[in-house]
Image (cartoon, rainbow, N blue to C red; front, top):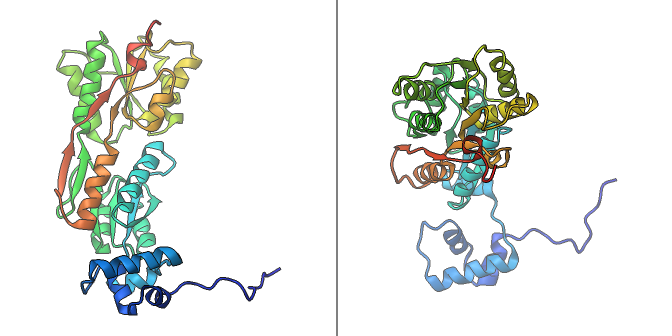
Length: 334
């Protein structure tokens, strides 16, 4: 059944209503709401904004975009919004955008699928795009063809002409593995993709060889909990078990913890576990995960400042910080 509007239904507030209440012309209302092109006295501006608040006026975003030549809409491409790390990243990007009166559309696309995601975002008339998904050469070409202003986040390497903000993945992994070595571990397994970001693998390998320790084992695992749990099945079949694990993401580590618990192996007394990301889940696992922290808020702030205001650096490498928790040092009193 279709509900009919009653005679007393409230009509939509218009810019003319705001002008009438503020006792100004309609163009003056536009100057205030669009912050130009003509200047308006502070007293008049206050009257207009007061009228906007009292009437609950909401400007039409699409019409405003046509007039201004920009939409204040931004795209954010992540590998998977189901991953808690990227869900947190999306929230930080949205928060930073809202502070600058911009809106974000987040889409999921794995490497090789960025072109399709860009087409979806272009249909919404976005002004710029942030890309946190690893890029294949075809993806880079798709970004260039789109003509959109693009900022890359946490990419293995920079792309000429595209601002890039990344964490020191190599340094972060090396710090985590060095922490395990300093705790007395000499056999430290690496759980991560066989063809993933080389900076993580190199950080593990260089930390080991710099202390004259033998590499291995490297057990392939993609960035998922299931893969982490399955990697433990392989690890437990080894003739000589490692005494510590470095997992290249929190999701792998969480799955690994489940596999170790099911096998009756105490963490960290029998096998210690460290990981990379420090996603929201890391402090709520058992035991809580020692993890390399990704400065998502700072990265989002810098990227949005560059996109919206055009100020700040166009490239930055953030220092990695190791957050030590019970998965490598044990709980107090245990």
